[in-house]
Length: 70
Image (spheres, rainbow, N blue to C red):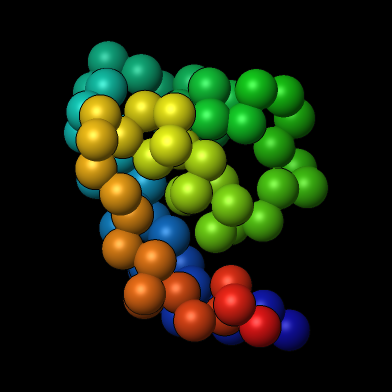
């Protein structure tokens, strides 16, 4: 089972990113990050790729995601 604690962490980071593009809908944000069907992308990869593409120099707070290093 996936750790439910990841939800708040991922949403916090996506919120930071989304606020840079407030005219985008959530679906647009996710699609623009992944570029195709996001069904199989891992949560942390979505955050990392999103900040790489659209973070405007900011980086996600990945130290809050120890699960991604397992």
